[in-house]
Structures are given as structure tokens and as C-alpha cells.
Amino acid sequence: AQSVTQLDSHVSVSEGTPVLLRCNYSSSYSPSLFWYVQHPNKGLQLLLKYTSAATLVKGINGFEAEFKKSETSFHLTKPSAHMSDAAEYFCVVSDGYGGATNKLIFGTGTLLAVQP
Amino acid sequence: EAGVTQSPTHLIKTRGQQATLRCSPISGHTSVYWYQQALGLGLQFLLWYDEGEERNRGNFPPRFSGRQFPNYSSELNVNALELEDSALYLCASSGETGVNTEAFFGQGTRLTVV
Image (cartoon, rainbow over all chains, first blue to last red; front, side):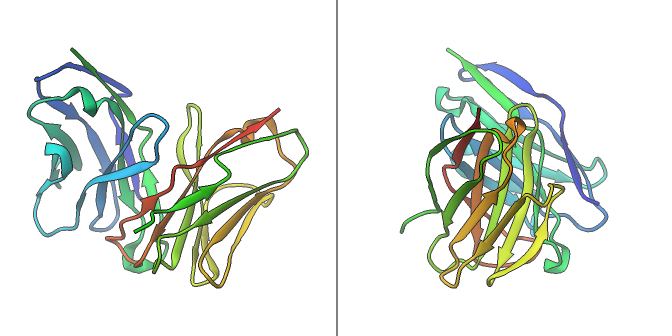
């Protein structure tokens, strides 16, 4: 069964410094992986997704993630943090191999704080 | 284009009552998913409906149920409410099934059980 582990529950960075949010996954199949962001009092928004086309995936707002099969990781990065990046970030694996179950398995989330 | 809409935004119920939450998917989407986001527990998969049928459910008791209507909107019903059912309930929709499915989320319904 698929699972996902977000290694940090809280990350704090200064504005203008790099962001690294770590995610490891477990999957019996070739996984589909996503990063979602949830700003306070708002719904979840897709940042990016890995669909096996390329290991380095670029998303919105300058975020990107690299799929590393050997490390079973899908870490999210951004070169320079902005105050508006403060939010909760969820790493997600799809349990939908062949469309059989089609559910998204969410990590427990990483709360990103950006200090001025 | 309208996104996924959920109603009500807030709901307060007492223990033992029933709660009904509603979700309208993005136009053209046939799949609806329900998730529970309880404090300290992260996002837990509840139910998946597609083309009017329940396709999968998460590890929740039978008092959590729902349905999908012919127009693909969906209801989540929670019977015999317990205090620990207090959570943000998120609905998502997608227009395709399969491994690379992207889900679009609504703003959620905040259920408080007192």
C-alpha cells in the first residue's frame, strides 16, 4: 500500500532564503506524487505533480520538486521564500494504480513559516 | 469557471444529531472525493464517488455515508455525531480517473460537535 511521510511538521525560513520541504513515499507501483498547499482558511491548491514524464517537476509560484526513486523522495524546493509562501504544504501519493482505487493519500503536512 | 463549492461553510451540531454536508463539483467533473481534516490527524480519505456510485471508502465507521446525485453533486451524511467528528470536511472533484488524477478542492465545511 502507498504511504507518504513528511519529515518536518514545522519549517521556518527567512524571506529570500531557500525553502526545502521533505517528503518520502512508499509505493508498490510507479507512484503519482503531488504537492498541495493550503493557505489559512482556504482550500487546497495543487502546486505540482509528478507523472513519470520528467523527474524534475516545476510548479506554480516558483516551486519545484525532484522525484528520486533510489531515495523514495519527492522533496519540494524554492530558491527564495516569499512572505506569501507561509502556508501548510501536503505531500500526496496517488493510490490509483490503473484507476482501481483512485484515492489520494496525504502526508500529515508541513507548516511553513516565513520570517521577515 | 466556478470551482468546487461546499455548503454550509460552518455547521454546529450536538452529540447524537445528524449532519449533512453538500458539495458541487466543477462542471464536467464526475468524481467527487470527501476528506476529513481533524486537528492533529491530517487529511484522511473518507469516500470516493464516481458516476453516481461509491467506488471506495476510507477507514471510517458506517455512520459516515453519502451519495452522488445525477448532476454529480454529492452529500456527506454523518449520523450519531460524536465530539471527535469535529473537523474540516473537504470535498474535491476530478474529471478523470487513474494514477495521475488531479483533484480540485473546495473551501471545506467546518463541523463542530458540542
